[in-house]
Image (tube, rainbow, N blue to C red; front, top):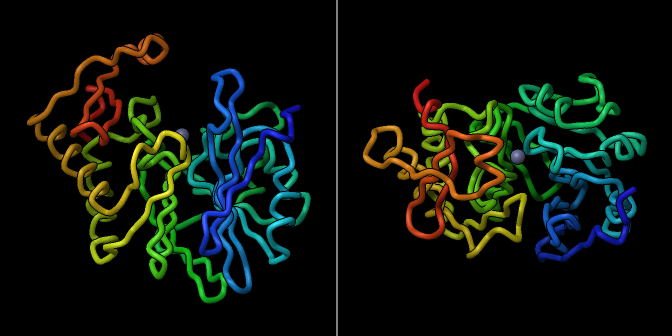
Amino acid sequence: MQNVESFKRQDMGNGIWRISEGNPWAGLDEYVDAYLVCGEERAVLIDSLMGEGNLYSIIREITQLPVDVVLTHGHGDHAGRELKNLIDHGLKVYMKLDDYEIYTGMSNKDALSRESFLELNHGQVFDLGNRELEIIELPGHTPGSIVVLDRKNQLMFSGDSLGSGTIWMQLPHSMPLEEYLGVLKVLEREVADLDDLVIYPGHYYQMRERLDKQYVTDMRVLTENLVSGKTRGIPVEDKGTIERFPNTLHASLGAMYSYCYNPDNIMK
Ligand SMILES: [Zn+2]
């Protein structure tokens, strides 16, 4: 069992708590993050970390409000083994069901049934009382990836879709870049008026600088250039990535905006 001490929490202000899990195999004190977002009447936990620990206790130390769980996607480091415990405590778990097979493929034999999850849809709003969280679909990294937007407070919680270092788009289930480009354009329009936007990714430690709406635009430009052929990536150097995904190319725009992709998965 995961050492419960490895779940750490940080008060980010404005009713936001970051809850982190380390990765001892990688020598990281902080590897993946869940976020607890509190309104006046309800709260939402965004993602559930990967191992077993004291996530429910941490939530209850922070708030006694009713809590729903929203998963940014189905990968095992964001939709982990704590889900069963949260459901046993009566929390509802929402995930875009396009990711259900990915979730079961990456979970152990104790994966939860499809019926354990409630569906998420583009534009769906969680009213927390004087705070609303809106779901924006962003299929790319996985088909069921979403980001969560708090327009009033200009916050976005992006899972692995944006901001978690080099975005992995080379996975067998990642969407073609042309399709990803389409949804990035939608997202860019959604955040066009949010001049003070702050993006909180699912792997906070990989964020090298504060991410704002320009980051969304830069990702759109990079993707546009790859789809049009104006830019072509170079082979990745990371041995582990090459072993698992031999065709992977790495593309970047400046030092910050980068992702891995499969050159055979560009057009729809
Ligand atoms: Zn992921």
